[in-house]
Length: 155
Image 1 (cartoon, rainbow, N blue to C red):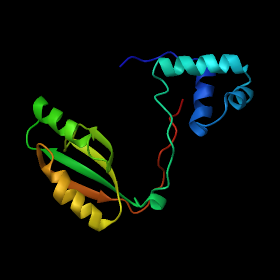
Image 2: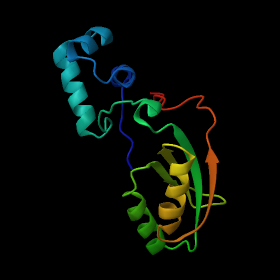
Image 3: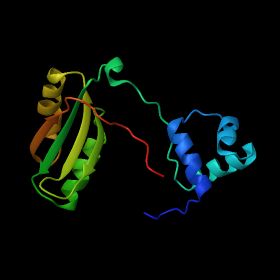
Image 4: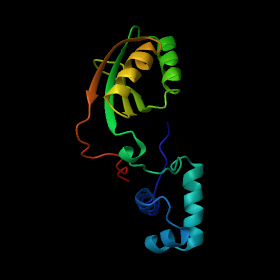
């Protein structure tokens, strides 16, 4: 992965866009003290260079029946590239998994999942997660309170 050179103006635009991804080009230009044409061109280049990967909507999990947040440590039965590849390919097809990270340490992957309730989690664990390729062991941590979530990157 290559680092992209960003100047202060790029960083200012990125901070503003992280706060409001739906801001109009006109408002973004006004808040950044630039012309709309200059902002349009800079944002286009940031997208082309892969700095801006896309735009999303931040949903309230409770209002879409996904109030339960869990983190799951996954230990694989073998740490070989074929097992890593098979696990990663399978987890990409699981919609309840909103993040999955290969980590160094006492386990192989850390999964972040959103579910309806504990019954839904029990089904997710027993019918899906433990049946993914290579899974030997899991440890689950249920979130009691989200203190900070989905924060902007410090640019």
